[in-house]
Length: 183
Image (cartoon, rainbow, N blue to C red; front, side, top):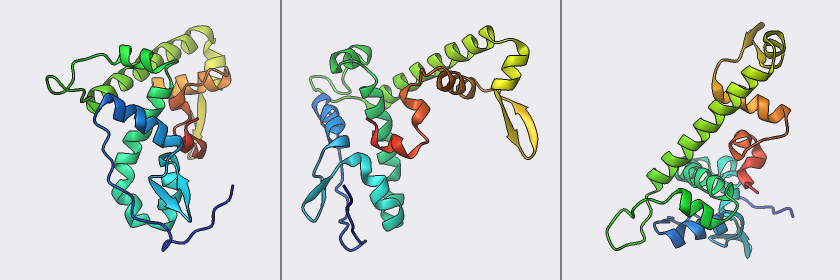
């Protein structure tokens, strides 16, 4: 579907707050299917806001970019689990306030980042183990300013290893445009 719009048709984004377990699950739904913003009666999912605002209204994008990026990270992490129950079991820690269902996005984010780092370390170690020194230098090299350099960071090695072996995880696609839509 193609939607043509101008900056005058693009409304101010609403202020979003997802504080409870139910709210977080609503965030996941809003990411791919919502009417928080509509243009000519068509609801625009939260996951597409970057495409809407970045070029058309850069000042607005600058204002919402940080929160949108955090939401993107949480949604991708949530969707990387088979079920919501599996996600909540992995993220099980006490609510922020007693007798409430308030979730701590910072703790969820920290847990997801820790899991990501551990997986990158594991996959990088595997790549270093299974390839000979010459193979490793060939596969895990890149050019910078005309020089051939060998990757040294676990996250870079792990990403290349997973891409070459069709074992990508959600964060391997973070920098691509299609990652904005997180399937």
